[in-house]
Image 1 (tube, helix red, strand yellow):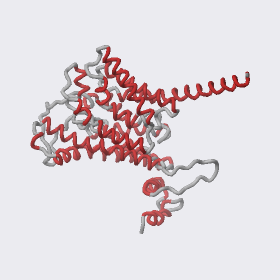
Image 2 (cartoon, rainbow, N blue to C red):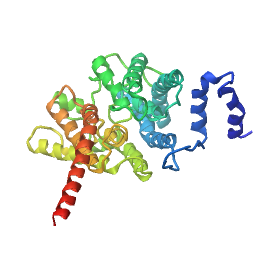
Image 3 (cartoon, rainbow, N blue to C red):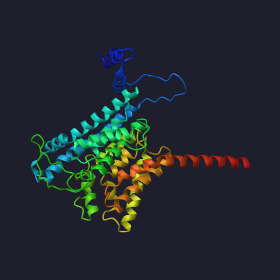
Image 4 (cartoon, rainbow, N blue to C red):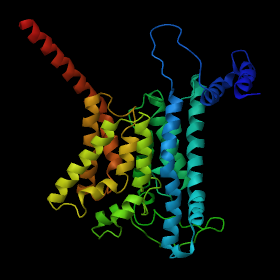
Length: 388
């Protein structure tokens, strides 16, 4: 029996009057994920596309895979480097260590987040929304590898409920849910999200890796800048990603592969993506010319979560600006604010998280101003034609 036949056979149990009708949302969610829905509109004018939201989210997940896989390798690499045993470890040994360190966070993210989504849909008798497919993998990628699972559970529950569901679910939230989870962790448990001791996994996992002493430290390059100490990473290290940092944010190469996938499939806006880098580059160059930052302007673009935020979070179609002109303004201001926060407030050496969340709030205002400006221009153009 094929998949369609299997779902057709069990569907009556979940439809109205069936013995499992209370679980209709759960059944519908799995069916529409595995099979392309064939439901059509019964009235009104509708525009249908060949790809639905679940397929779009699936492509974004695929685009995130290079960052996730490299992040797993880098976790193992940083562990062996800190232990002074890098020469004795092979690729698969380092990757295996990182896999076993990162995988529990990915599983917890999906189990908790999707569990809340399923329960919410059942409670409201609605379809299960697919937005968490992407959020569930982004959250583990933007946190330190040492983040305790219980903290991750609390942050995910807070973000999904208070930043998404109470506003109506997928497509209705005005803040990026993954960034809300990170902000919750950052402000609630700052000692677990910043400093020199949070970037390297220290536990020995199933015979892999090395048990580091409790005092083992390894600051990120941005942490060095904030502390006024010289960088101990080369530009090559920054681009490849073999530096301490959040799990999926270090490798510009892996992020660039994801960016190509998103742009080639037309899912992400190249205007938003490009304008973030333009805003960041110009602002960093200005600070460099003033002697306010110890690193070159281009190094700011490859450090921390700048590239990851520009590619995967600033381009979120729900929380970003939607007008074409608005995308340029929105992205430029994100890049500008990220560098301003980095340079002028050492307490927030990353900057990208706060910049995106701030512009999420102002995105509707930007679109409102752009639309009204276009209306005024058209009205004036018509008025001038009539005057002639």
